[in-house]
Length: 335
Image (cartoon, rainbow, N blue to C red):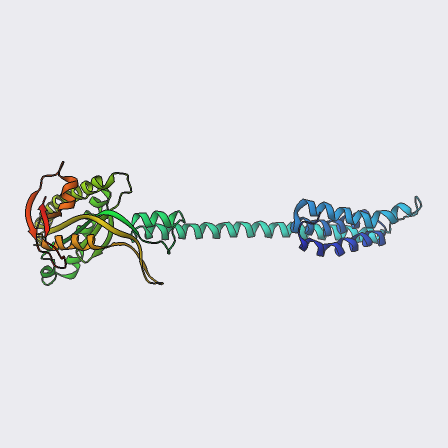
């Protein structure tokens, strides 16, 4: 009957209640008040089984003396009867007050829990803007560990930047420059998500994006998605230039892009206090060098990417280029 040891401390109370019922002459109202004083705490502590155990113990103490007494020998003391009514009313008041306070506490805890849940949901929604979608999904599902080991995987990596943007910062007001950059990055982000890319980071006016095989498209499908994204970004930049021309901003901006497909390491990198979900490796460096070598509005891709997309994308060979930091000449193609 006593499933948990903390129920045992109530046994002396139950025995005392049984003795009090016998000592006060089994006055009904007083006995009921005594019984409630033992039964209700037992219910709170251990539920109905403990409550029933309480009644059994009280009865085991109070009933035997009553059964041994001669019939009619127990006379009810009027003063005790009055005291019993007072005790019963007081006990009822205490019980009602305790129930009211408990319900109010439950309501307050529920409101507090809802506020915490709303705050957590707001933080998660804001977090979505700052982390990569795979990492966001893992955090949301509580499946992410900051000890995730980086894995080797074939990815298509994309780099872009705005040609002449540094010079533009010297002649445009800061608020205008900030607006133009945000409009540009907002448009490029929408195109990235449309084609299934993951934005690794913004580097000033530069963007680093990688295409992982999260949709089951395979390396060729991811490479094709990346090239299609680059083509649409170039078209989107043409529209932005027209909008800025009409507004009289005088920002004739053009974008350069580089794409390479190769094996990278993807995962968490950083320190104990700051982690970054990103990709590293020679393939990343090569994509960055291709972007540096591109002319304004040009999309340069490596031979590895070209072999994966040539069945659907028209390319033009730029020959073998010597790229900074790359040991061997690289066969480069323009889209």
